[in-house]
Length: 135
Length: 287
Image (cartoon, rainbow over all chains, first blue to last red; front, side):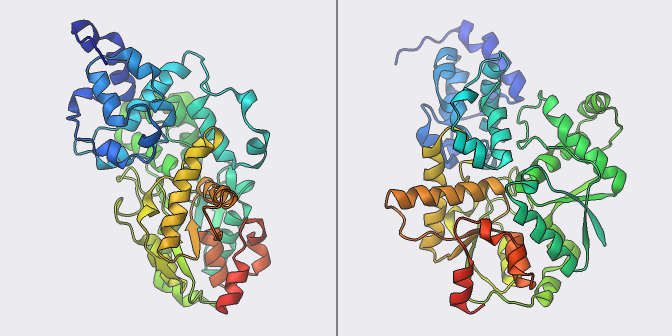
């Protein structure tokens, strides 16, 4: 993959916004990979948590926005627990989700949810799912 | 002794047995779970980004109401525990955020409530030795896998035990006469809210938890979260359908097991609502 790295993307408004919303400093990550190693769902992500942070460090906004990683993260905090620098990749992925949801764009359409799920699932699953995936 | 109790949304509906077995067990142990006069949903997930103050208003209302009724609040659902405990910590640690929240919900809550999980009540306020002494029907010979999941342990500063190597759940099971089974996936995520839109991931994650526990000899799994319970039961059905599981094992709430051991009537524990019934195993073990 050819990527262009320059001042315009290294210090882009998008990267600053992600830092501000997540409360995390991207430069604190030195890419040890413990987060991705401990992440139970990294196998299903386009880019693991540590790769997402690296892409953000390099200002690769479009690649990060188009990756499924933020929608796969369950927020279990194993990444944060295992990070030697106390960076929470889960916070960063939540900030990325919020950047979509706060525009009023749903990730999942409520109409498409299986009726069986809405009928049988514990309320907390529905509430949590809506908060993570629906605007 | 009376302890203020926050049931949360799911314990009034999907997980009634979790609620009723805990209330009855408390009476048998000599204390009362006093449901808060007024409560609302905790939000079912802690807002991870610090700018999301809206997400803290609901749980702070719960904390503020609880503070009017006493200095300690307990919950059963591990997610409710996690959300309330973390919100309380934010209010304690951050004056600016505290003031904004209080302005929004017209309160002056200071963050001085003690939020504890019901397992901590049993360990620290009652004592596992006293729980053991009150057991009328020891669950001898039952090999139980204590499944912690995420919310009881992470982040570490609100966890009820060591985030990597916890033991409180196993100690509780020992008090009931069970044989706790240690298994590698006991602190791994079940897939949580992905039950809504990604069945494949939930089946894989929860399936790994089930296989990991069964491989170590667990005959039942014990949970403190209705969503984990739902995912662990559901994944077994999926695995049975595709032939990767030969026998389903019961997934119970820890208070149902407590109720059984304290001699509660089996018919009041909600055991009939579980997809895989523990009663044949009780019979087999002569419990």
